[in-house]
Length: 207
Image (cartoon, rainbow, N blue to C red; front, side, top):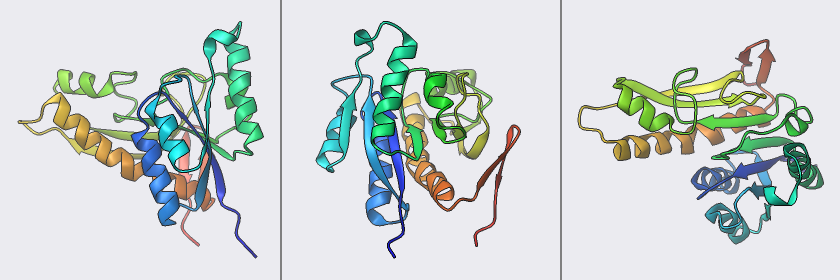
């Protein structure tokens, strides 16, 4: 019997480097999943081309075509449903995802954030951490909820800020960790090892 692979729907807004890391892990079979669809809120997002280059369905959902955010999020949900998605991954998706999607995929919408939450929420987290002068920042993978950067944390990894770092070198360090920790965390989901208890996430031992 052929084992069914977890089907991912990846939401992006830009270049899709984390999408590429997911695709690479799927193709290397270190992640027991497949990217079923990539959805972007920008028609020119390079990540859409990345998807098509790998034979993955790529969809642009135009906010201007919908009279409300609810209708827009319903359209995103419909695209994910049609692709038979099991888990949604927000990989550089720079919009707030509505409850129309979140409620349909409870504890199955994963967000990647370039800081150690709950510190430095928001879109400029790398620069904010650098400007604040902290010595350690990092990467967080968490379940999304209706509030930005707030849901239960699945995994985190620290990144030290060296004396000679610049915002650009720090960003490169962050991305290196992101490209590793996101596929690894998705593999935990594929193995059924992630359990949410209130605000906490428990990682069950490997069988």
